[in-house]
Length: 491
Ligand SMILES: [Zn+2]
Image: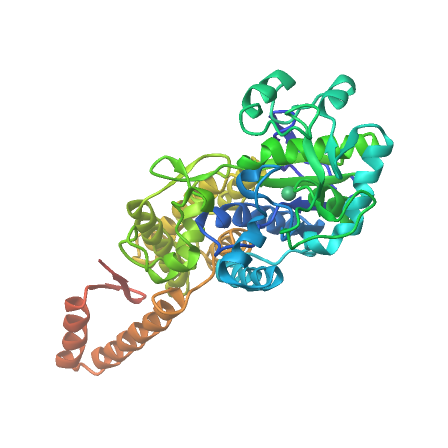
């Protein structure tokens, strides 16, 4: 399949032309949430980034199998090999079954994603439902000599692996760098080397989430699930693996090592990573305690928020930055996003009010090409948005009678917005303050202007002036052109 899409591959550190391994099929795996708390702004970014890719690949004609997992076991505190399981800890604190915690927060996550207009993935596997596949993976790595047993737990032998392959290939580290950063954190006596990581952990007596295995009653290491489930649903080689930049090391580095150690080669063709959302320059995260949940954004119920922000405002805010750039949260930035989005929505809703002319005084034919060019350039959504603003300007000029457009150019502008703003960027009209309501208000203004035209035709100047003056007082600017009256709302 021909396309011009280039994506930045973290593995090769450059933009590459996207070539599917098995067109028209595309396999895409993205690390999903660890479901032990409400989804926050940090969860919205990877979900929206890879939703854009999912939508765009489908728009280009690919049949995409998108797998996004739910981590419900094995993710220990501080992403370490020691400490309590994040889900189990929450269950203990709230006196719930771990699976009650998982169910509750999975549903909350789904609800928030739906509000953000993030399309559901094709498959959403749970780590706890794939223990057998993970044990199988650990067995293969043991058989190939890249892991060892220690007191009922299995560890990946990083030293041994690094002699045959490069541990650190994705993050650009070498084993010495890794040792320098991990020595102080871990240093448990079960490991041969501090850089080794757990593939299977023997459960301590108090640990409630446990499964039988050939080595002990225990649970899989955090990195196993994505390798095992990616392979199960997408095969031994698939196209795209994505996630947040914070997952490059150790999570994705370990996934590569597990894949190579078990099957002799990496599974993934393109590794893609979105940048983080910061708050006052610091990463926003549950473990850092500085996060704002998506629900708090939607309701405005957080001391750091000056107002509520609609789901589409959050989505638009995220898309105003390129996915590999940082986004720093602030009320000002969100308010700017809200205004910018409503300007685009207003322009879209005004398209129906353009009186078509016999010929166009401005050219609209390049807009689509430019938007495709921006999307093909590693999903450059801020550039797409800037082209939509240029198109909105043309729409407003035509509504005001300052530009002429043919009927087919008007249709072209509508199709531009339908394709890029709605289908690809995934923005939708919101009820209550959103554009659906504005469209209805707009139709009321149109009706009043029709009544004014009838009054004028009947030389009923008192009524026609009254309608005009009252609309003006409300902030509407009414212009009489030879094709009838046009309006816009100044505020
Ligand atoms: Zn993962």
